[in-house]
Length: 102
Image (cartoon, rainbow, N blue to C red; front, side):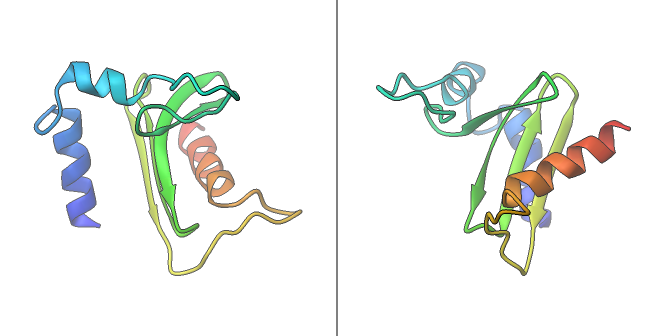
């Protein structure tokens, strides 16, 4: 987790990616079918706020809310597969963001 937090800090400071490339990375890709995926990250809207990030293996998530200065990094031992009751790891991240905004 410490390495992920350090990566996030360096990402914010443009240590290994330029601001121009970061904009490219978070720009919607013009797929034939509409998608929330960009040139490298997934794009999300929650409560009218734009965010970007990625999830992996239904057990990890990274979500950045640039205007709020909020980043969620989630790593779990369990898997958050979508079901009828839970939409998967993104719903867990959305809940954490809602709690942080209160």
